[in-house]
Length: 365
Image (cartoon, rainbow, N blue to C red; front, side, top):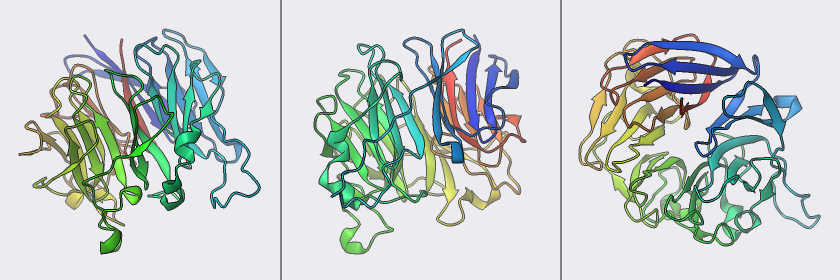
């Protein structure tokens, strides 16, 4: 059985069909010329969501129904008016949707969205309306958040616990890890164990200024989470309450993307890069690293990836793993795209000439 995948790029939405023998088709299917900043395929009802970042025209959100061809523009998350006496220095305007996640299986229609600046929004009607999660927006520690790569902080990772849909974990750059156990009514800071080399030594363990570049959760082992941090790889085995730094990763601890096996929480993939201002593939050669034993050892996977004069960077949402635990799709800011049908052992080039890629996702055929 084949896999269908989508790539959100600076110049539109691309669709790719991959077969089990390594064949593929690739086509620009929607939003030609428009930046597609985020994608979500909702496996509960088959809908596909695409967020657009249109500059002067603002951010937009579109939905396509399962097996449909027509896209419908739906509501965008929006902040309330900023109180006149607010000391907040950030503009309360959604600049971009930086993450989208479906609610639990028992929450039909529930969606979560993370934005720049760092707002978390919830929809109960498949994106037809949105509400700011004010309990997180109003935490006192938000005054310490700052931009990591962007001028403002943003929420890029949203992890719903498959055992309890009221338990949600989010990652903020730069604002650390936050959790709710009551559907968003209250939040606790949950970055214990992380450290930030970019801060003065006396502040490097401050939980509210950590920069978790990306956080993912294993669906079958939901207490196992992996984080690619600005200056390291971290793992949690207790649902994100405590984090352990993983030493010994080859090439570099820096990177953005991480994927975890849906049924084996000890297996995860990373895309190392050179930090900080370089933001390029390590030594001009693209590689993916994989651990299959919870971070005790790592393999470097290069077969089929460019190994000379390669300066590609893979963003936070530029690496996706299909539900089969074997099919991987990876795409870069330089317009390169690669896929693997064997867990990364061998990669095939999908394209070397796409627009810069912001997000990729798989969808069930």
